[in-house]
Length: 159
Image 1: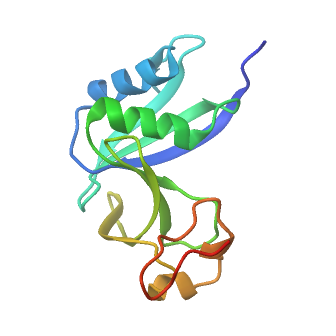
Image 2 (image 1 turned 30 degrees about the vertical axis):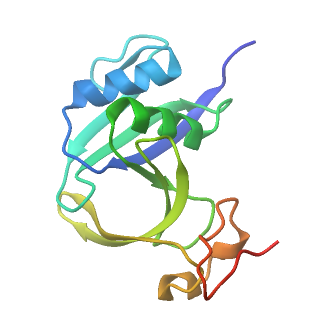
């Protein structure tokens, strides 16, 4: 079977990490070569790893990402390999909502405050998506996501 590769993944990592370490974790999770954009080998994924401020200072862009595997599955495996949380876009149109792949492999919906800077987007103030966060009221439908808001005593889980 031929692996399709035309996706783009944009992640951020909750620690400042060396680019080679990030690429190594990604290569291990995907069981294939991962290289820098400037020096990518044929068949290898092309990545760009750079740093900004904020609570998620390592930004990871993966070009020609495989489309035959779920992005959150690979992000979860990378988070486990790195021992640090990885933040990735979710499936809503809410600009503050993300999926957090935790170091234990768990995936959960969260909100962050994002500020655009000259160096790139900085993300701070991570908080769970509960359905009652003011950010949940933004258009984009937190309740319509595959990653449901975490229930709270005030807001029990929905069916």
